[in-house]
Image 1 (cartoon, rainbow, N blue to C red):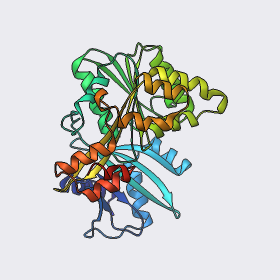
Image 2 (cartoon, one colour):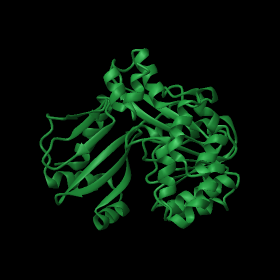
Image 3 (cartoon, helix red, strand yellow):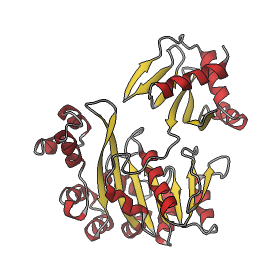
Image 4 (cartoon, rainbow, N blue to C red):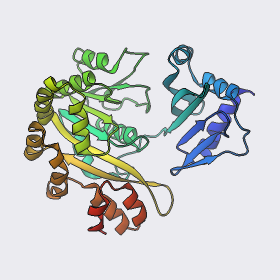
Amino acid sequence: MDYKRELEDLVVIVTREGASDLHLTAGRHPTIRVSGDLIPIVKKPLLNPEDTLGMVMEALSEKNREVFLANKDIDFSYSVPGGVRFRGNAFYQKGAVGAAFRLIPSKIKTIQELGLPDRLAEFARREQGFFLIVGPVGQGKSTTLAALIQLINEERAEHIITIEDPIEYLFQNDRSIIDQREVRFDTHSFRSALKSMFRQDVNVAMVGEMREPETISTAVTAAETGHLIFSTLHTNSASQTVDRILDSFPPNQQRQIRVQLASSLLGIFSQRLVPRTAGGLIPAYELLINNNAVANLIREGRTAEIDVVIETGADQGMIDLNHSLAELVRLGEVSAESAYRYSLNPKALDRLL
């Protein structure tokens, strides 16, 4: 098998079918995800371990091949002629190589094009603070993050740095200067890149993911000292996000991080991509805006009460996930069945439908 040609042929299928992901697994046909559903490409032969290894090696740079063979898994980016780019993860399973490729759109969509609330743009226009976009894997967090960075790039002159593993969306300098750093290639770690930022005259930083307490602590400190920091976490809700941040620190440090987070946090945006009745996906979301009430709850460790603040804070611009889902049902965009499936509190959703 010509692995380079086969991989490029699969890329054509992904783009032609409007797929979001491509999966390569030994013993299976190559499989794509379209509108949330996995669909095997049955016209392609079943892949054997040599096929999956060969295609993954073709997608990796020489340095990444060494890292992958040593560590048994790796995050990477993969590009083909024509500007098509993927974020990938390669791994071993049952002694064979597997991989998942996520298509990265070449055009960075605006907040409006993504179907997100206009209120979100206000956070891109702040001078400093810490803003998080959260949600399960594959729910569009990176795409929303890119929309916010691009908005800053178009509206004002700032020095923006992105720290990613791997680099996903490629930005073109507009009014801002954007430097994109990839972990392992341009910096050793998220934390080291964030620490270096203090000496680089940076205004805005986008951190691809908060993976350890040291990175979170450095990001919060940066937000306190005049920087605008954006990042993501794999959590389900705003209240769970605050708990996850606090619980990542040892008990003797939690009081300090509660105080820092209460003063530096701008807000938390949680999103889901819900199947549309007409086909495709549409976002449902929750927005927590930090105010005096929220800051007090964080400082006092009463994070369980944050959900109530969101539910009753519509007049301050907060958005409850159930209200977002109920509105999509009312507009005929999603079915009630889908709304219940994606709700974190179906009983409360009952009262809105």
